[in-house]
Length: 153
Ligand SMILES: [Cu+2]
Image (tube, rainbow, N blue to C red; front, side, top):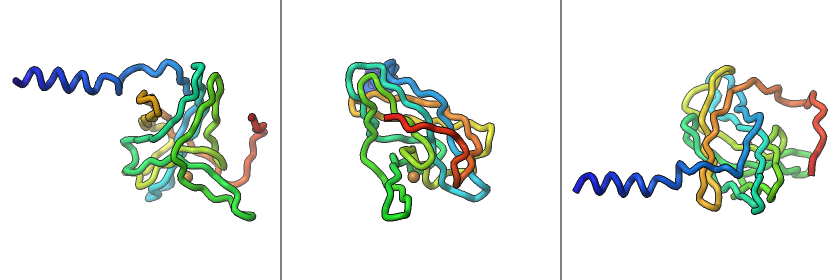
């Protein structure tokens, strides 16, 4: 019977839309892309207010066909980014996604992203929870850092 199918589908999807109260994301933004560029990245501060480690295991976005979790490592004198399997947010702690460090990589973007637009990013956690973010697109200076960011550990 059709109604049963619909109800079952709704139940199956319910956990996906459950609020993820333990995770707060602040100052998130996506890097604006030049025309015809197809890669971008998402940055921001992710706070975990629970007493358990939360682990981001994947991310998706309508703005890009491929979304990966990335880190930046030093290989000799060269900074290289690489895909990582997960990003852990310590219990009652936070991590900062920023240029030159952890970030969410958008590959094969479906269209160029201009400042003032917003994109959606869904973060999937190891415990099955999903955090949906609406992220503004901003211009980010590439290359040298002009901020006075202190390293937090
Ligand atoms: Cu990357």
